[in-house]
Length: 286
Image (cartoon, rainbow, N blue to C red):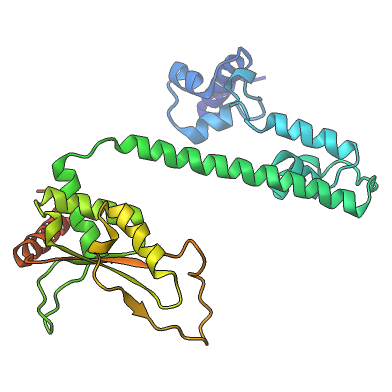
C-alpha cells in the first residue's frame, strides 16, 4: 500500500500521539502544551472517543445525595418524599432516579404528608441558616467605617429617604423620617459626625391613631437615647376602615421624624456632596 501523504497523514500522526498521551493519563491542557496544538476544535477531534482520565474529573458535591436518592427510590419513596428528605430540588431527584422503576406506595397519605412536612421544615431551616451565614459574612466584611465612609453613607441615605428641597418649594432643612430603627441610628450617627447636637433636634412619632402611641414613643425614645417627654406631639394618621392595614399589632411603632433646626447650610453641604458622589461614580476615566 502506498504511503499516505498530506494533511491527513499529519492529522493521523498527531491523533496517534494525542491518543497515546490521553491513555497515559494526560489532561487536554497537558496534551495541548506537549503537542503545541492551540486550536480547541482540532484538539477535541484528536482525542475524540477517548475518555478523560479520572483525576481530571471535577468532584460532584451532589454525588452523595444522588446515591442516597437512588437508595430511597429503590425503597419505594416518591419524588416528593425524597426531595423533602434530602432538601434538594424535585428536578434533581427526577434526573437522578428516573431510570428506576416506579415504586408502589408503602405508607398512608397521612404518613406521606407528615414525612414531607418534616423534610420541608428541615429544608427551610437549612435555607434560613444559609441566609444568616451570608448576612453575617457580609456584615463582617464591612468592618469599622472611616469618617469619610460614614459621611458618604449618610449623604446617600439622606438623599434616598430624607426630605428634599424642590424648585417650586424651597425648603433647605434636614428632615428625616423612617420606620427602621437601624436606619434611624445610622442617621443620628451621621448627624454626630456633622457636629449636630441633640438639642437642635425636634423629634416626633408619626403613627396611626388606633395604635399605642405611648408605647411607640417609649420605643423610639430608647432607640435615640432620650426621655420620651422630649418628643413633640405625635402626628396621627387617620384610619380608613376600607383599607386592610398590615402594620398592626405590638410590633407596629410607626415612624420617627427627625427635624434639624437651623440646618440650611448642612442641607446645602449634603446636596452638594450627593452630586459629588454621583459625579465621582459616573465620571469616565481619562
